[in-house]
Image (tube, rainbow, N blue to C red; front, side, top):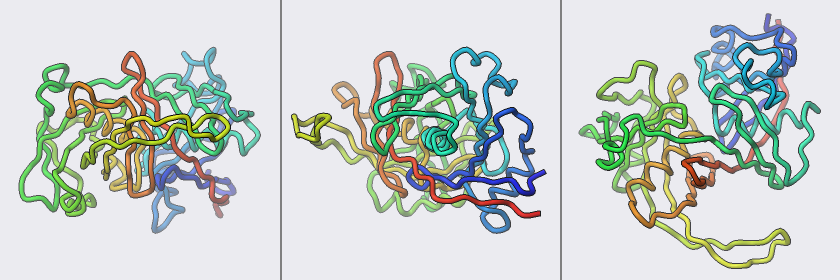
Length: 306
């Protein structure tokens, strides 16, 4: 079952994963096995487990065989299935490279199959930029205009706060707070309570918008060629099936999308999202797409014993 299986530990800004190769789809893990391996006290410990399987060998990817060779089978730490994971997607591509399952030169792009559809990942030196697909608001234009469509009770705060639901396509609810002291005050070891309550759970991002700043733009040779305006937001996250994590890729995208909506007309398309595990860059693309870029670090190899 899980004996003698080797995993690679990786993370993207502290959002950590255990990855293993199952090219022919012969060794999927059960929900309970994933939960046991991801347990931080009695297992190896991770926010999620990622299985590398060819699309041709995975029923969930049957409609993506012509577009991508590899499917990212992502499970949350409790064993539940997630559509995809932004930080995990970058780490997954780095893992495929390490294992010799994918060759990706600097500046090149690959396509990966996920439960959210096929997504492209572009390699940029030691970082990766992933096209995260289209975002949507379950509450529609009315929710976007109002700025919220649910109420969220957060442990550590004395009253519920309004939140805006954003699908990436993982479900997220973003709550804005007035200052960094309140952000630190929130206790995300306790699952936030939403009204109305979602049927399939919810990822919750608590954010403090920090305004805008000018950053330098450099060319391929490293020379500064100008500046651009970016928005900045600081974020903490409670992931469904996991708890508080140091980072969340789709959550960072949802936080940037929601904050941009709150800023209104003239808000920047580029965002820096500060998370406890580091920094991510989110760019709004034409047509409602979102690009997420950041590091992908592989830190060790672990073999399970009997």
